[in-house]
Amino acid sequence: MATVQEEIKNFVQRATIATNSQEAVTEYFLSKQQDRNIKKYPEWDKPRVYPALEVVRAHCELAKTEERLRAKWAEQEKKRKFMDEQWNEMRRQELVLRESFIKFNRFVRENQEKRDRADTKIKEEHDRQARRLEEIKELEEKLHYMNDVRDRMKKHVAEYKKYQDYLDKVIIETGEFNSISEIFNRYETLIEARSILSEHQDKNLELLEEKGTEMHHMTESKSQKIMTLNNKLAQLQARRDKAEVQARKWETIVAEIKVIAAEKNLEHTQVKTCCWNLYQQICKRKEIPVTVSKDDVEQQLDYIKRTILELKRILKVAKKHATK
Image (cartoon, rainbow, N blue to C red; front, side):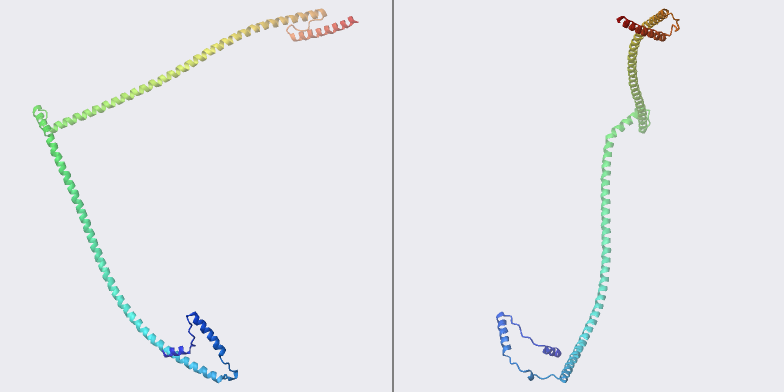
């Protein structure tokens, strides 16, 4: 602490700063006034600086610094010992806490396991109780159902007692049956025979319906075929009538053509005869022999044409001479 106080003394003390603005301004002007009033001495009044003084001053400062350093080391050693003691104490407390934590953890784990086992047993017991309650409920329902069945059976027995008495009376009076079971067997046999006969009858009715349906379909198909054939027959008759009309028409046309052909043939024969006669007359007048055959009408007409042209030229020449 002494070294710290010495270090504080070595620091330059600064003036305290006033918080009031007026006081601060006043102090500022006072300091300026004091600076003006300070007496300035000439430089020769200052002590001179010698190297020996500087060395002495440096040795003094070094000694003071070493002394402060030794004090710091001593203080650091005390602090280190104190910290080591605290650290050892903390380690000891840590070990104690760790052991206590391990014991507590073991205790908690054991308690948790015991609690889990207890919860498991409680849950199993609850499940067992629930199953037993369900079984009791089912048994009660079954008991109630069986009681209902018993009551219904008693009721049915009471209702059908008269039928049993009647069947016993039938056995006694008829003498055909020895017990009620024989009556039931006979009844079942008759019912079975009835069912067989009804099935056979149903099959026959179904077969009859199928045959009727087939006959109806066949009748419809045949009637449709007959209608189709009638339509075709009507079409063929119409075509035949039309063909007969066309045949009569063409027969008439052929007859007319034959008449025209006969007329044309007669006319052709007459023309050929005329051409032949005219050709013979021309040849006779010219006194030339007949060289063209009777059937070669084209040559005859050609010769007649040349003759007519010659006559026209002669007639034209004669007219010219007559006019002169």
